[in-house]
Length: 344
Image (cartoon, rainbow, N blue to C red):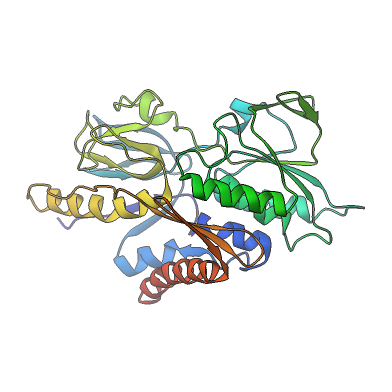
């Protein structure tokens, strides 16, 4: 019988997180960074099932979905992303908006900013990585409010942009200070509507958490081998260590043979490698492709004011041309998928 391919995903579109800060600051429209998954599935001849995986039985080769019951498979490719963990790590609070999942974050933030206000809200951003930096800048310059909000940026004790070159950290720090964004290099928790960070205690109107993602529960519960954080353990071919007929990539997976950080930069390059190995297995051939991270990755951090900071290894450059480069790369990436889906 002919092979049957099924795409199980909760929404007919996918929101590209790299363009969300640009939406907040008014550079992009809300729907400019959407990928048409339904159109892509149709163009590829893939059956689309709009639902969520809640459990997997790797031995029985089945997935339990929330609404459609069981789906069987011979081979499975998992790229569900990570799950939000802000409430678990910081303390649950109505003011808390987790960046994960990104679609829910956009909806929550739009709803929050649509509320009538006498003055601009005080916003706290927690998470000192690249995502947190861009969100702090974007929220300070948001086009969705009549007045620029006060933004406090709580990096955690790891500091600002851990792992980045000193020159990049310096430029980001200088720009944050120039925009009057307060930086607190302490860990934070929420208690009774207040944020406690070191010796500081204050009550923001909105708290945005960009602290990375956790692992979903169902891979471990189903018997898949996972690492200490609960992420699906995969080899150099993105194949599960315990069940080789299951592949995984992105924020839900972790390579055991190499250090590959959870980052969109690496996930984008891993996807074609997984696809090639999956095609090889289906055709009875040996898997040969493996993603090898480059020594340095390109990061473009928007400042929310028409400039961006370029980071590549030790190199750090800031300017309007960097912002134009970022917009060109982002829009070209989205346009590639738009062209594919239009061919349906």
